Image (cartoon, rainbow, N blue to C red; front, top):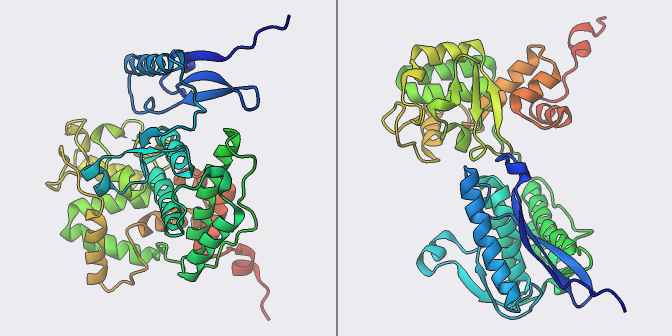
Length: 400
């Protein structure tokens, strides 16, 4: 008599040895009767945002109880009945007015939201917003074609290609089209891993063409020095904001705007970028001598540790400015001195890094300054901004 096959394995927690820095998740398995394979499911949602082990264990226990009760009552994760789920691609205003709970069959719309729900606790806020926006627009295009209820297995190369061609016809930039194609492909790769579909239909899809480089351009050293001095005389808080971008390559949007006094350590001469604010991963940034002098002069360390460095009253405080405040302030002073609009708030970051590179700093040091993952990427970044630099041509080319 053959051994009886296990139908399911009840959920259990993987807590990474109890370390908060580890990836926590609840895992369970269920046999798919369609292929007789025991499939594994993992739930990551919600753990990353919890800051203590007690909170995470309580969260895990709630998930384990819910899934266990459902399985023991006869539910299985492969049912194609109507399901209720969080609609992650609803616009914020729609979600606030009507809520974001939706009822649907397990079609492509359902799986987009399941994918985003799994990704949400693992991604930085801005990255999650990009995923959501790109997938929302693709689904809205499917709706215009009468494909609201299309199943994941019915998504074809023609669907993706047709959508990408509409973006090209609308004049979208190459990098936008490339990112869109990547996001759609990531969902479909995820569905392949989940064995919902057999293969990813995204192939031989064009990237479009780049029309114009809209990114922030670097200033010359003289321009940067003049503008920073001009700002210092008129707006000390903006002066500090621009200085920190220039000297430490801290991204202005969330990394710097949401920086707190406790993140600055004048003893170790470092700034800590907390994971919830970082674009990619958290990091420790080294401060040059000049920035340490600026921060020491304003006695930054004497403020309450939980205060935002850039408070709404022009000094450290309990409320920080909105995301557009410093960009608009910078634009005002840039326009006042007649500098081109290609110079943006972000220009301080590339200007500082490029001047650091041109000073003779080795590529690994420049990489660490930018917090890039590889020197190859740093080389591409620098080359894109100022071209290939050749000291032999500049200083040793023969003269006639």
